[in-house]
Length: 317
Image 1 (cartoon, rainbow, N blue to C red):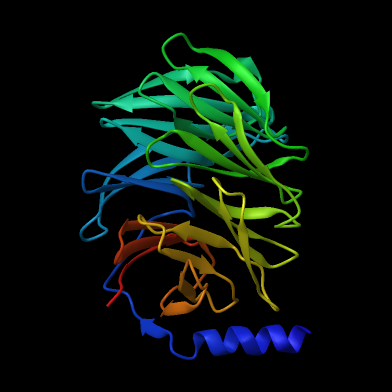
Image 2 (cartoon, rainbow, N blue to C red):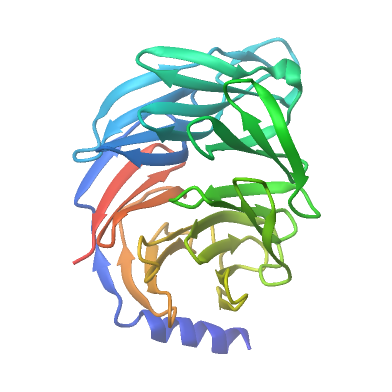
């Protein structure tokens, strides 16, 4: 059976067009999260800083540093920036703090304001704007928090799934988030009131490594079962692509949901597939390390960032 699956996948890739980078860049630290607005790329890193790069040429234009944190031995280390988001030029970033807790900051016009302190003891792992005044925060416990940025307080907290949190993504219109957990569950939750729109079980059957959501679709890639799953949120229908040899470590939906980008091999070759057939149309060659984030600028242009700080812009021809 494994050989049959491999032959099918090989056949789907026979006519895939190979794409090389149209622009490359480099930052200090692993790319952990990435968003784009008004020609700039906002990048969360593991090096204690948010990096802002120019979308056109991938050059670094600004860095926002955070304090170092003490480990259990009392030594100072760079803090991870777990996630980053931006709305109307205001940058929201979630930062690792001591004791496994997190702190949340809003940066505007050269000033950083702490809106969530570690004293609130939230084991937060991702934060995104629900709107300019509220944030959706994902907790390690697989709970989701609606947080008032001005009042600096939790407004509501709900349980997303049954396991531990793994990854979160927000729709481009900020109406919903998709959350993947350690058990392979994918929860779709409304940002306005945290009501659960949908819970998908037993499609991805292991830890979700990467997730994306756009309008009526979500996509998730998982670890041990090596599955890319495409979810239709309205109809509950699903499609799966099983990879025989390597986990699905990164995924992204195109802006019109006609394409899905993903990584599924130890050569760090990214692939672009048609969402209807899951037929691979493009193979993106150029990364030298595992890719953590892929973001589409438009249907034919995308940017990816790796564990070693590689930034690559791709143009599908």
